[in-house]
Image (cartoon, rainbow, N blue to C red; front, side, top):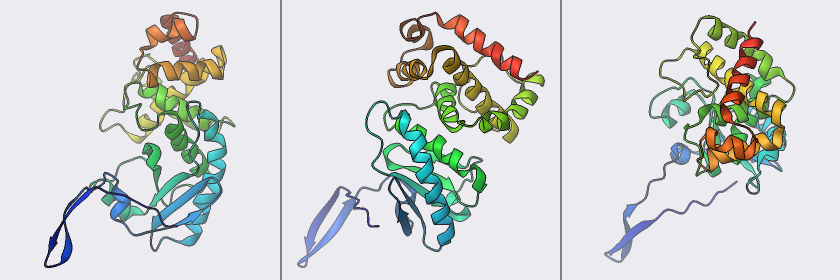
Length: 266
């Protein structure tokens, strides 16, 4: 379906013809890629021309289901009328990310939508899309940035863990990470360090998931999301937000959830 894209530009008249002298390039890597798209009631999937139609429709079906889950975390405004998914083949993924081929399968770009790699595990596609859509509705365009990586990623992982399968999948990596002494014992993990192995990446996501699940089990989902808002969206630190939102000091909460993480690795 056509999408209107308005870019600032300047023009001059030469020999009776209008000539563009400058125009603003967008920051979106797929804007220069010819795309075709399919649309459902809650999602649109766009992919480079030539992508298998079956791949588009499989992704759309997963996106429709994922939107229904992620939209309940849209607490600060309406969810997108339709979530937009940009589906990249191997060549496009490298081109879209400046010639690099990152080790992740998806990324969220706020109101612009999410980008994912084609050809991934179809069984894991709904969870991947729930994760990325949750970033869209909870972080949006103005918040996040990795300052509190554990909380941003932990909420997205929690949203994807409706049947507990995400926790089960992450636990083996968490156990190896903890038993090898690579975890510092804090649930407040910062952004992913460079050159982190795939297994350690899964472990860090798993710790973030266990931490947010711990908060939900202790304080309930609504208060945990209020805490998320105070820290991620209002730029308060956990030590300031916890007494106001959770009704207790942060230090014992963080220590208790770290103990829960360790107990899950035994």
